[in-house]
Structures are given as C-alpha cells and as structure tokens.
Length: 287
Image (tube, rainbow, N blue to C red; front, top):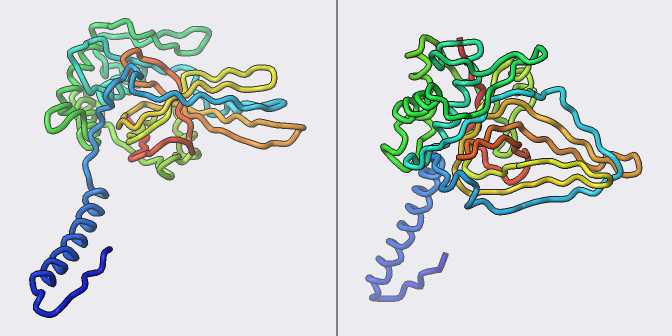
C-alpha cells in the first residue's frame, strides 16, 4: 500500500489518504466475504467442449496396474439435443441421476425402462432422446429454476430442484458429503457409496475432463481437456492406475468415472488432484 505523506495544511491530502485506506480495507473485506459466500451459477458456456483447452498427456513407464475395485461398469449418460436450452449442465446431471435410480425407484422416470439385464449386469440404454427422459429434463429445468435468477443454475437450486422432483414422484432424496478438498473427494466414502449402488455429483468451478485413457506398450496416453467454466457432473465410480519403472512404483493417478453432461452425452473421467476446483462433492441418497 502506498504511504501517505502528510504535510502541514494539507488536510485534503490527509482526508484523501484516510479515505483511500478505508476504501482499500473495505474492498478487501467485502471481496473476501463475498468470495466465500458468492453464489456460483453453473453455466459452462459450451457443453460440446468447444471452450475447453487441450491438455493431453503421455506417461512413459515400463508397466502399470489398474485398480478397478470401485468401478461401476454401467451408468446412464444423457445430454441435450434441444439447441434452444442453454446452460443446462445441472439439468443433465439431474436427469442422469433420475435415470440411474429409476432401475430401482421406478416412478422417477414414469413409464420408462432405463435398461435391461445382460449376462446378469444391468445395462443402461443409450440416450436416444426418449420422450420420457426429455420430460424429466424439462421438468428439472423448471424445478431447478435454471436461467431464472442468473445464467445457469445455482448449487442450492440444483439440490432443492432435484429434491422437489423426487418428492413429486413419491421419493425422499437427500445429499451427504464426500468432500475432501478442492481437488479431491473422500475416496473411502465414495467407494462405500459405489458398493451400495449409489452415485455422487460434483459441483465444480473449474475442471478437467478425460475423454479416454489408452495404454500402449511403454506409455499411457491420457486425452484430457480443462475448463474454467462452472460445471456439474454425475460421478459413479473410480479407478486407480499405478505406473512402474524398473519394478518401482513412481506414480499413482485416480480418475472418477463421470457422465459429462455435455450435449453429446460423453462418458469419461475426472482426474483428482489435478486441474480442479470442487465447490461441493455429494452422495445422492434416495428412499
């Protein structure tokens, strides 16, 4: 802060310095307080990935192992084919959650079969723009007050809107936290939820998204993009990859399985302890 040199008969200068000091303190405090309590509206500008930055990576190693003990091999991934609807990630996340639980709580998506058993594993149908799931999407858009008070959906409206929708369908939906830090979730809590056939949801103010992981002979390719847009995604499991050189472990990466919420309805991963700011990390419970 610049010092104010007060000289005789320079009252105006003194006052200017005082006001400058007070103003600086006021701005700092308001900024801090506002920043802590500021409402984030989840409204990533381009859910097709057009505003995302490429951040591909090669990891060179002799060998690797993949821990799949917390993988969920099947989850829905719905996008949005209605070009007139903007800022919709909260709504697609809610739709994915409704469709996921509809296999057990069958009135979440009325008159709809979300998938079928194949070799003993429940397999979700792809997003074929079903009339029933489109109705869920449009209803959640209204319930979550999307684009009403701001551009997109606030975290509180996302949660209250999803709860209101579930209640209307005859169910009680609650959230519990799996937050660990701004770049990670509590993996034990999340793993227990996955084993209980539950999903989570991440409310992110910046994020990375992994489109694919390809293991080659002596390297692993990670197709990754990053974004500073605020975004919401359903997560439904995770993997850990261990990398070795000369028999020694030198790196471990953890990737959350995610339904992207992009227009295209991609499924991929979110890498934790990476380019990521988690505002809330929640387990979705329903009864």
